[in-house]
Image (cartoon, rainbow, N blue to C red):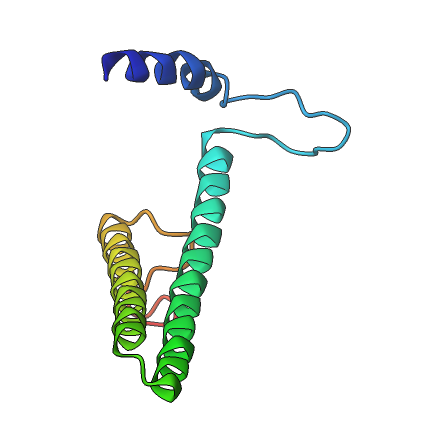
Length: 132
């Protein structure tokens, strides 16, 4: 375990240390820092969540089709397998959305969501021509 952790630190340590400033190449305009690295990771995780949700829904559909086909043939064993596929698809979808929701709750609580996405109303001084 410590060897794996040491290898990961050796590989990703310089990446994180040098993430503060990068000389922009001709194809990239702007500065890259740790926040752009985190933003890229967040984009990849959002894509992964969408893929996993799609896979869970696909498993549910495949299970339903198998159940219908097994019902037409009258095979009890095939129906039981199809029920298992449907159950695993529903459980997977439940776990994915539950974890996704818990992460969103933690991010909103800690205030680490995307800028401008919080629903927290900031206090203002009445009478200062602001929308209070």
